[in-house]
Amino acid sequence: MSSHGTWRRSATRAVLATGAAVWLGPGAAGANEQRYQSQLEAVARQAPEAQAPEPFTRAPVLERAELVRQVLARNPSLEAAREAWRASLERYPRETALEDPRLSYGVAPLSITGSARFGQSVELSQQLPFPGKRGLRGEMALAEAQAMREDREALRLRLALMASTLFDDLFVVERSLAVTEEHLRLLGQLKKSAEAQYVTGRASQQDPLQAEVELSEVLREQVMFEAERERLRAQLNGLLHRAPQAPLPPLPEALPAQAAEALPAERLQDEALRLRPELEGLRARLGGGEAAVRLAKRDYYPDVMVMGEYNSMWMDTPHQFMAGVTLNIPLDFGKRKAAVREAESSLKRLRREEEQLISDIRVEVEQARSRAEETRRVVALFQERLVPAAKDQVAAARAGFESGKNSFQVLIEAERGLRRVELREQMALADVQRRRAELDRAMGHTPGLPRNGETR
Image: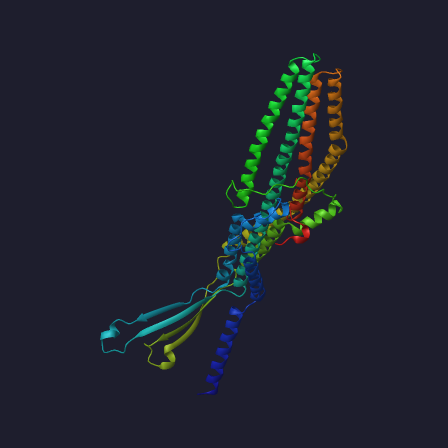
């Protein structure tokens, strides 16, 4: 063999090896693979227990934090969102994989029975996209999977907020029933007082009857509160994925006081921009949009198909083995320009959505902070002025009625006013917790859970 032929074969092998290395090289695949494995581990960590135990089996009272934890552990919506995230994540190996190789076989029919040499050919080919295309497709798939992960986190915050709010609604109903019981006893005393005054001739027959009417009205409110308690229990059990009529532990008699948020408004907003899953999900989609633009621009470059063939119909053995490449020629610039413009427009839309979402989050946090501050001031007003004044009014009206200085109607109106103020006080106390939960959710914290105990 001549030295010229040897050199030519060596050069050909070097060119083919270099080309294969360029087309099959990992590029950004290493970083993408790490992101893929990291998300796979996160999906596995957040899998629910095989069989969640029955909640609150030994709990003396229903605690807000434990209720939220149980809802997040048992609600099937979160598991459905986790499976959607997992399904989206599994697009990555499909998007980065090479197409299946193709094997073709041909035979010369007349050579089968004739005296001629048997003729057959076998060809194996493999499509190879231009370097970087597979990595960009993988990057887009991982970006969408990350967005699905943040969608699940946003759902988690919404479920926590629902559980915390229902806890407060149930607390209001329970405290309203307690207030109603107190006023039933008070009205019973007032009715006896009216009957005693009527017997002595210092009151009319209308006064005991009016007390009975007011008692009936309070009993009607009691029935409404009891029915509302059952509805709220069914809602909570629905979040817990339990039977609607399943029992719940009794609620605590009082809610913990909430301290005022010490951080300034801008600090709260900045924290929300750092933690909100909706913004993280949109930014993940932004990363996917940038990869889509690069992929559309890379479509100007050709893909390659490599092939190897054996053809027995060649007489010379060196000619029976063939290797070759096929390139597509991207001549239709119009469709490629349109694809680039489409990807760039989608990316611009996502950037505008990011700007709007940042503005919305800042407004949401400020509104939640303002409402939380308002409810704290309202509770202070009830406790320091409204409730004491209403109680004093009932005491004065009762003393006035018993001494004949005012009518029984004045006493009934005072009692009705006290009942109304005490019921509104319970609403205000729960509103403090509701607004705090809304502020937590607006900032990206889990409502109802201690901030140092959160897990994502």
